[in-house]
Length: 438
Image (cartoon, rainbow, N blue to C red):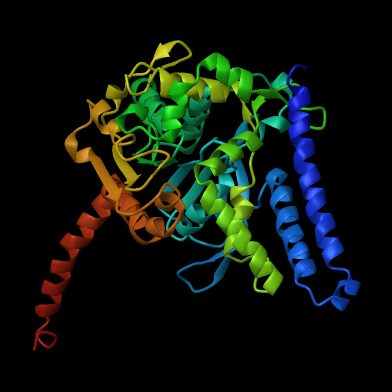
């Protein structure tokens, strides 16, 4: 019960700010305020609208919002979200496109459990759907999981990934984004050694901390500065009685959000002040650029305490992945066992969370993988978000990832070879037709 009061206090502060925003918006919108030719009431209403929306979004899980896509037949096809594998702390879900012929590419996106919902990869999913069958890990908010469901640390996370890969079969192409990059790597190595028939065809690792010391950032410096005792004392709280996970030890999403925003506080402050002015002038929209971004960015979830603490201790402090010393259920995981899975690294030149070099370190650990199955790409001018969901992803990285998948897909390669050899025969037969060759 020691930390339950602080959890409830933080939630009380959030609700209070939401209420203040709603009250200011209502007060500034009274018709009588029009009698006074002063912009104060417009600004008050605008501030209230932005504030209410901001603090209400912090506890709302965003919807995927992918209702349909246009296929090559020119028709819109409805997209349904279905659960493939269901687990207490996270599910594997599929975006099923109804009425469309199944795509040969099968892609499993591994979403981070780092304070945001998997919907942070909404645009990534939408960009891949026209060309692939897309699956994604959908992690649950820890505050909604009863204590009776047990613990969840990075080993459990890795086991979940192993189960998900096993369920999809060996023809799947795995794409891991940010935090789960080192764990997707270890899950693949585990399968390579113990169940090679279940390992994926390719593994694309995007901006993740395989070796945090390869290129220090503010995130890695924080992990070095604090002790595990300090971290547990200051960051971990118990879920309050309001939620199903009452009593569960968690790293609250609101604390994680505060950390995210403090890294670029000036930028966020400017964005919100400009949005207040736009609302006051009547230039803002419900789905304008600001609201689209912050509706997703502000929606945070609690992480299980054991997952957060084991990530800091084993990935950042002890560097178990970087030293190839990670274990799952007491079994050592040797990254050198990966021999048949092609691996591609994607990094952003201006990534301030997982700086260039942290993810690239994975290639040196893959001692059993031949050079022709290793690839790397550094996106010029791209930040962390841009390499998996921004303009850099859409214009440059996505085509490279799809080409990498195709070039390492045995069936696709055989088909391409067959097409190349069949064309000359067809031309030769047509030329031999006399009149056709005339």
